[in-house]
Amino acid sequence: MPTDIPAAIRAMGDASLKELGQIVTDLAGTGDSAVVPALTALGDGNLYFDETSGIVVIERGSTYLDPVSGDPVELGADADLSKIRVNNGLRRDIAAALAGMTLMSANPATRLTAAQGFLSNPDPANIPLLDEAIAAETDAEVLRAMQTARAVTILGDSEQGVEVRQAAVPLVAAGAGRNALTILNSALNDAPEELAPAIKAAIAGLEQERAIWGALQNVWFGVSLGSVLLLAAIGLAITFGVMGVINMAHGEMVMLGAYTTFIVQLVIRQNFPGLLDYSLLIALPGAFLVTGAIGVGIERGIIRWLYGRPLETLLATWGLSLILQQTVRSIFGPTNQMVIAPTWMAGSTEFYGLSITYGRFWIVIFAMIVFALLLLILNRTPLGLQMRAVTQNRRMASAMGIRTPFVDAMTFGLGSGIAGLAGVALTQIDNISPNLGQNYIIDSFMVVVFGGVGNLWGTLVGALTLGVANKFLEPYAGAVLGKILILVLIILFIQRRPRGLFALKGRAVEQ
Image 1 (cartoon, helix red, strand yellow):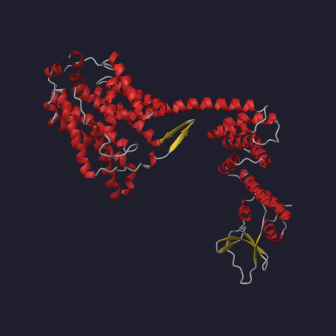
Image 2 (tube, helix red, strand yellow):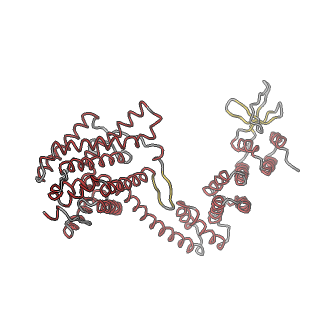
Image 3 (cartoon, helix red, strand yellow):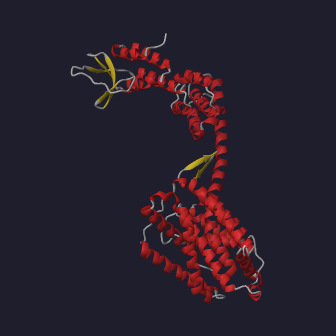
């Protein structure tokens, strides 16, 4: 006979603990979500019985609600309320009843949440509920979570047979995710001798698997660092390759690109807040044009007078870098500025055993796009053809009618503009300060020298190689010593290959 829900709830008012237990079982057996508020309130101590009217209500602060409909209830002035009391045993029964109801919910998300709750709080009393739910489950993800929860519960139940617990070990190892090692190590502490080998084997397998994923995680971190180094170094590579100029102010172009992004976002935030999510995209052309124009101005105003004098060029650009730093410090102050990450770059995701932040992911994609566009410019445009001609033989290119001063100015502007794009990307992973560029200038030179001066593919391989090497060395040597070791290795490398991994044939060779 179907349970009358309103009548069963009214009967709670003067029921004994034993009778309350039966009522809870009957209500849970209906599978009706309407009984959840009453059972939850009973377990929380918020269910009351009015002796005068004979009704049961849920207390919510200063108001009282009907347990079935949830509507407010007006109690008379002579109301005589008493809390319906439960003990710990009944609370456990209520929790199990509610869990059983959510396990059998029509909503897969609700069932998944319930299964995860059983996984985090295993109780042998829940095994029959899990068996029933597993038999009826059709969703693969929910079924896997239920089976894992059952396996974890069985593994921790000393009353289960050894063979049954052994069968649960691989299920725990495969389905408990990051918590699997913790669960297995905890089970190993109390495991009988017959069960210990199976648990130890599973732990060893998980540790080996984690070591592999840890190495792959380091590779990903190295690729993301390498993409940042690529953005910072790629402009320097073409400038150095075409012009032979050691530009110590290249890092300040990165810094100016970051501050351009800050200004663009500040204007958008104050005047067009609806475009805030697109501020980085809007800042990209702005940073490129600003830093590119400054680069052309530097080449026309300073560098053009110093060709063939590398020491003077180095000193002049170093002095210029100090001037630019102080100028920015005077305008914006010495404190760090903040650029808000757009929503599409916030958060992270799990890819098998890898943790990938969206910010780093998009920077890697952006670096590859910039690299591809630069290759397109160098190989498919008149300016790129002229730049390659000047790189290989400046005098012959000039004799053929190529305006080498114009190529120099455009090359310096292009390299500085790409550095500005690097600054836009760096706003998402580093502090914006007047010293931002100094953090990357040395690494950028190492990438260019290691990969091969003026060779874009060498710059790509060099940046990714140094990025991955840094991330593998840091856990053992620390960040500072790791960089020192990288520098030593590069010095040893260029003793054998002075022109880097991918050497260009051209002006540098002829000289």
